[in-house]
Image 1 (tube, rainbow, N blue to C red):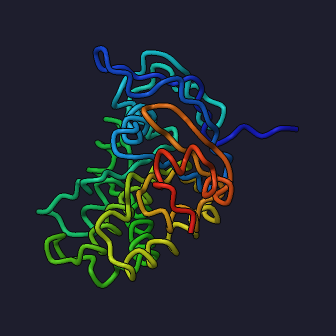
Image 2 (cartoon, one colour; image 1 turned 180 degrees about the horizontal axis):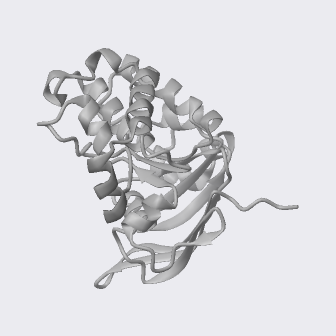
Length: 251
């Protein structure tokens, strides 16, 4: 008996006018894996995340999550299917507290459930939010505004907004950008723990030490094409990757 991958991408192509941002990209993310996605600036990494989450419409190709096709499914439908993402720019609500930032993302309601929640708020949503705050070490910061947090804590809030949605597939867009060594180490441990919670991760980042350390598989993009795919040890020494991305450094 075979098990469908958490994410299956086949021949995904995105064009902006005459520019091909993604060119027949194909790869799988097995359930419970942490898959890294790397490539130089402009390689198409964020475009891929936008296409997976429905914010960019591909010209060609096919996306499945847990064996279900996402063809024609809008962003909110993909969220209900178990996809969650973070953004490079964090996208926090600066006038809301940390807890409120998470509560906003804690569900993907319909109009009917929204009306019901106004009359009878769901306690389990608040409980789950508090559990995520504790998981990320943010309980003591829960009532603070994002402006009062460190850069590392703001990144954890952004991650928490993804986690409160109870995703099966979490897409992380450069979560370590701008973090110092200790903040990255804290983030590394949080990401490592996600598969044990039933979450498959697609991790986009320029921090090669983080990618090579936590990922089970790495996919490499260059000019919108997959030029390599495999375990971190193989990617680290792949000639095409060294030429395109790592600048020939193998140590």
